[in-house]
Image (tube, rainbow, N blue to C red; front, side, top):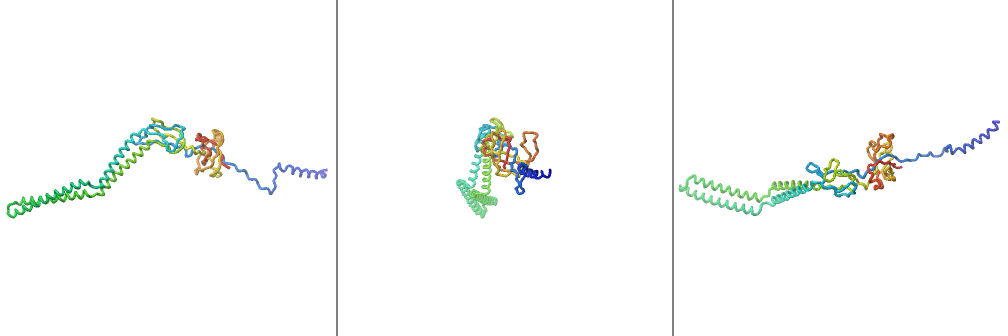
Length: 340
């Protein structure tokens, strides 16, 4: 009986194998192995403006920080590059210091010009007249000496009188020589005098530049086009360590992704990314722009404390395609998927 049933059982088994082959996942020996699907890199991150938050420092004058006289912006204002942000209360004092410095420069310029031009014509004429007078006195002294020498031969003049006349001639000769030297000194432009006058001018110019710089710094201008995030010192207040205001360049917005070091090999520049979060009504797309070169600790912690990890991450900056949608969400925590 079993022998007669065996052909029927064999045929039934073959038919069952053909019917169940698909559900059992049987494959042909020559079928290529299936590759696992490529997936993106998921991580947490936060929103950041173009070059981060820029804190505008208050100027310092004479070792102290002046008080804000007038604040020209408020929180939330859009500002242009070069726009006036604030004016300090020491501006009038600095304007006076600049005028004094400019006056000293004018005096030093005049002094240098005088030294380089040499003596005035009137001074030279006066000195030449003095030389002529000295020469006249010398000629008179010599005539008097000759007369006394002639009288000496007849014995009518004493030795002491002769000596006095000789001394008078010598004194007159020295007076003429001194007057001539003074004329030479007036006509000569000494290089040392020019050097001293030029150094005095350079010193006053340096003082003027410092005064002009200090005056310019009494008005604070925006170094970028962006948005005022926070005002740290208002009119009548003295700015502290936080400076005057905090600005952000909101025309360029980034998502900073904290990618685990085990996943960073799958991230490269130019890769597409999608950013989402509870504060975003819809996801925002972006492109990986830079990949950090430093491994740091995770700062964007998960909301669920049970998922806390002390993993090591690399920060990746993703430039967002629609910066206006996240301009008001600076430092907001977001979820990011990069790639595939």
